[in-house]
Image (cartoon, rainbow, N blue to C red; front, side, top):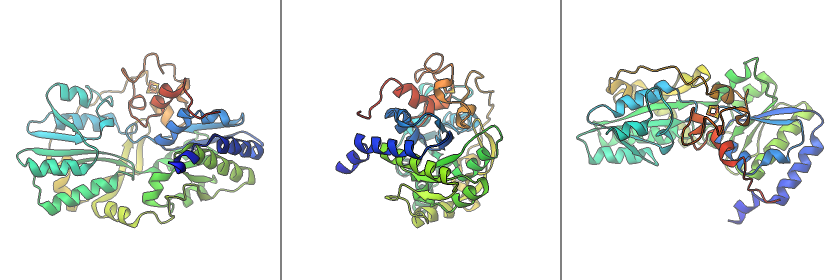
Length: 366
Ligand code: SF4
């Protein structure tokens, strides 16, 4: 408890604020790429502790938000197939799709179940082999090891009617797309600590070198974020572009051998469309051919007819860091958590949901 308190200590926060102000001589724009970091920034009002000219923008750090409507449409169609039970994380139920979300499908009679782990879906498949059990698996590299473990467990148990609808995405390739976009101005990056806990930092050094910008692997508590911002600005002011690890209590440069091994055994890298960002080369993970019988897209044939997204939603600009959620004219008016126009208002990691929820309430004591 004391450890967590230290990471939210107002005195430390203000000391870091002073360090940032002392280091800053000109405007800089820093992007964070993690929904958890977005929520901490909004919840604790950390941007108010930064000097004028330091702008924090939010990238595609919410995996639910970057999942294309066509993928949700496929999940809905699979859930509505006779004899299917669809298991997924709670965040996915209300993500808008072309013809209604998974919650609406459930209200129409589809068997859609919320799980905390894919292993619950494996257990359901073991106990009820009369039905097809599909785990709809969404996330960055952080959730892929659990999905891989579920597939390997299903194989070891000899399950005949378990499969995964995999929509996993990878962070480094989408960073390459963003940094190559001439509309995007990013001087430094805060990388997501939990992704690097799994994958290590090896993929980030070439990005820092190629785009000449600092990347600081940062945690999720207020003190983590302020220290990550301080380190990024100190590098920028010194003209350095290195990968640093602020979240050293969890991240090793080589990552987790066990988690990376599970991903590599079960998945392979593939191109992947991101909602609002288009096709990202090498941006996703798909099941290897060896595990084809656990691939829901190959097991269950469905018709998917996707519609164009609501044109009022500017999630694509939010996910590229071109628009801050507070500057979207629909925030809190036409778009609320009860009536979302886009995924960033639905997901617990969505940037629009963070600013809608926390804009009137800052929790860091002054
Ligand atoms: S506030 Fe709503 S409409 Fe605006 S970008 Fe976010 S999700 Fe889309």
